[in-house]
Image (cartoon, rainbow, N blue to C red):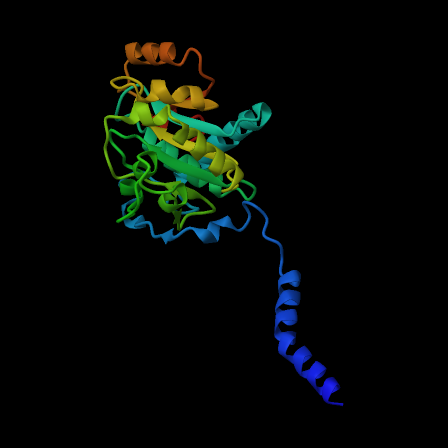
Length: 266
């Protein structure tokens, strides 16, 4: 009888472990890329400054429809060619490439089956975090310098289904970093661990520094931004020469007068 009591006692002692194992077995399996969003700190965007920087702020924003059309066209071309990475570039500064990269990422994230990662690698004038009104954010440059791991410089802004690698630091060694294995690691991790369908890079202008030249061989395609009444023909010709061996997915005419819109009703 004593042996039976001892056996029952031992069974009761082990039962919580068994119950825990059963609960773990019944818990849904974690799918790579599906639950990863919760692993990153959420940062709050100051939407009060969105209008000033021409960032999409709500579903009623008339700019949203234009970027949805751009999103659909880009996705169709990228999916047809099995492309995952796109750099948003301009010939010179002031054309609106950063605003385009942000709004394109927001439009991509609003589509149910797309999870974009936006990366600020404009190491001369990093502006993504400032335009989004995010304060005290990590810097992607820390990753390239080997000071922090990639997941430590990745955040989840309170925007639809997107991740962000912001940057608030300037360097003149961007070309060295962007041509290194760190860039390969970033792209591989964003695709295979973050579950990103599209990685959007905000890159320094093509003219004036060699960051873009160093980075372009690692990206699938580029979106070229030109500003109406601002970007010179000579600059576009030089940009086309630089991009001669790169897949140009399209060109956006930014800052165009409303009268130039094909159908302003929409």
